[in-house]
Image 1 (tube, rainbow, N blue to C red):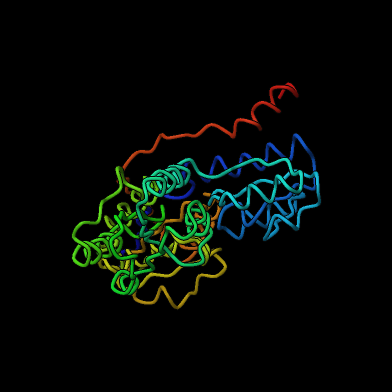
Image 2: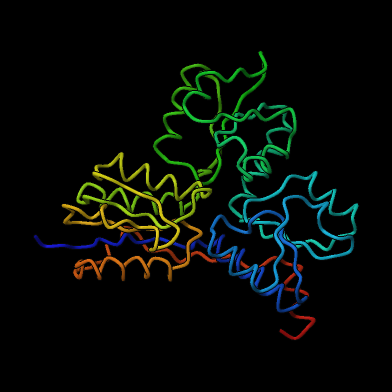
Amino acid sequence: MSKRVLIAAPRGYCAGVDRAIVTVEKALELYGAPLYVRKEIVHNKHVVATLEQRGVIFVNETDEVPEGQTVVFSAHGVSPAVHEEAARRNLKTIDATCPLVTKVHNEVRRFADADTEILLIGHEGHEEVEGTAGEAPGQVRVVDGLDGARSVQPTPGKNLIWLSQTTLSVDETLESVAILKERFPEIASPPSDDICYATQNRQEAIRGIAAQSDLVLVVGSTNSSNSVRLVEVALEYGAKAAYLVDYASEAKDEWLEGVETVGVTSGASVPEELVQDLLKWLELHGFHDQQEVEAKKESLTFALPQNLRSDMKAAGK
């Protein structure tokens, strides 16, 4: 039996995650520890634990940050109410919101100003959804999954538009949209795609190898929406089994029984070192033939937040 590993590319860090993590690292260098970050900077256990060791204090709410201190807002974005709370507490804020999330925030404001009700396709309780919906309280209804699309009840007579969380399954979002369009034929679509390039590319990459894989292993955390979606997409596109692991140590030997081909990928907030650890574990189990399968090249980068760049320049860094 010839054992092989197909490694999906692109995988791992996207431009927004890279920007957010570098923002925290540079802020630590510049302002020193402790540095406060509201919520997890990105949804990855390893990244959060590593930053905690370096002096980052993660808080759930802005009121947990001592007055006058510096706080970084996570890549998932925050509502205007959070900015107002920070201003009241005289906090210096550094906003590491992914620019692609900011784009959806701007769309919500624009359509809300035009008295349009927004049906936001996304996961209830996810930080990105809370921040986006908070741009226009009372004018955004969250549509969570296909059941949400079937049951949402917009205000009668209102103009409608659908928008989406940036890290959803492309296929499931299209299914939700189809249900909404059937129920509300006049509903408008967003001016451009809300699901981010990295989410789409990582799903496309795993779609390309899922059907050839007896097993797909996705490196990522359970609270990472895009990582969880990769497991779902792998199963949907033909993988016989698929699992999500934070670390190689969580992978189980019994998963490899009778397996010839393993597909490997990682979520957009996962450092490559964790993927390499998993590949080493597979090699120890006889999977020496490891090849990368590239679906698309990525080259996008985002500049660091403006006020951080200004402070770095003033400090000569």
